[in-house]
Amino acid sequence: MGLSPNVGPYTYNKLFGAQLQESSLPARIRLREALQLFAQCYRDPWEVGDLLDRIGFEPAQHRQFFDTLSGGQKRRLMLALALLGRPSLIILDEPTSGLDPHARLAMWNLLDQAIADGTTILMTTHDLVEAQEHGTTVALFDEGKIRALGTPQGLIEAQSYHSKIRIQYGEKVHRIVKDTSGCRMTRQIEGSLYGFGDVDFALSAAAKLRREAPATAAQMITGPVSLEDVYMILTTNDNHGDYINKKSQEASQ
Amino acid sequence: MTAAGLDCQTNATTSSVERLRLAWHLSKIEVMLFVREPSAMFFTLLFPLMLLIFVGVVYGDEVDDDGLRYIDVYFPTLLAAVAANLGVMGVTINIAESRARGVLRRYRIAPFPFSTYMISQIVVGLFMYVLSSVSILIAVALLYGFNLQGSILLFVAILLLGLAVMMTLGFLIGGLNITVRTSQLIGTVAFFFMFFGSGGAIPRSQFPVWMQNLTEVNPLTHLSDSLIQIYLGRSLSAEIPGLIGLSIGLFMLIYFANTFFSWEVQP
Image 1 (spheres, rainbow over the protein chains, first blue to last red):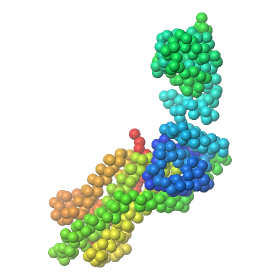
Image 2: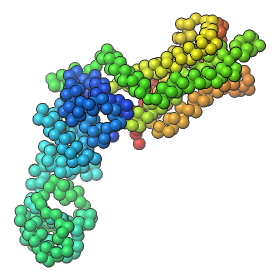
Image 3: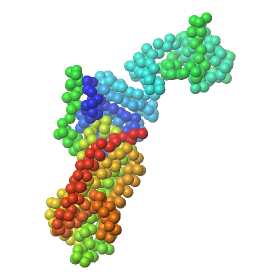
Image 4: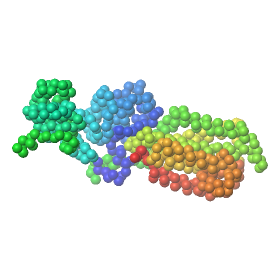
């Protein structure tokens, strides 16, 4: 943004909106009062009533005390505070964690609207489904280091796997999966067996498991490779599980 | 610097007038929050009155060997003690709890500058103190008669100096990166040390000499003694060094409070 950090937090904090994972407001402040107070920090803030309406608070709720709000409502209010100054950048720390599906959807509607209005959102999340669905650029972190950076689709395609199967690990199950046509890699992660392969691999493996190990078939999950799978692949230490890369084996043969 | 950067900086730079405007709005909210807190109102309005009435009923009209009514010494002492209570306990706990709840973190990100937050706390403190002292004043005037012999302006000025010292001390303790419980403990111990050490409960003249010397460093001693002297219409000359000490102490406390203030709980 063209400023040195030396200008101090008071100057650069005005340039972005932020929603922190752990922050709060005084217990007995009313919603409208809170937004009116924070609006004083900005030159061209949102109209308070309009913003409260947009984040889903009924006019009758505008006078509610902060401490009477549910967890999801508090998060929405905190997001409203981040949006209040119409910043070009919003920093969000796990904005949807702990929210029920309705509240999560409402939150994303609001964020998508902000994005459509030209706002850049920099957010952290442990929910890779959200990251895949809404992110334009994703950085996958592990132990404080970036393990991969790119668009969600780009990161998925870079793995060259198209389908996956996940099932509780067992030696027999493992053998069946890795011998399935189109399997390129299997990994044992946290007690589960992951198999990755061609487009048809997962369905073939599922059918085979239903035939040869029907007792285990009820627990299996199949589908296209997701960002979460990419994260699991990139961040699992080979020493922690059984790692077979059939492709590299074939190549060495 | 890029043009966009320059634009951002221009928008981000805030004048003193803007900071004062922010402080005004934050102060209004903080006062409103205080009024909505029943326990805070109780301790501000009723507790000092209860102290006055309980002590007043027992000793109020007693006259010592010099012909002084006990209440004429107790009234300024009580005003000083309320200032200490409000600053060292009230402000300390308010700041420590706000930090523990994450409210200060939110204020900082807003961003409210430190000076703005400090001014708002001073305004709330003043508001509480005016409520409290006026209620004591009315009670004293009705029950015993208001008997100020010295300059009222000087009395108020010294009261404000004392209040500033106590509130800044509260700001310093409350601003430290420690738990609410620890802040509360330090604030309570500091208050009672100052209160008893100032002769608020037992006259200092009855202390052993070493304890009298030790309590010379107690800011509440000098605040109480100065107010008593003015209230009784006596010379303030013996209290000048103490008042200078309070003034220097105030600047030192402001410096340390600013230096050690922690907006959020840090591991």
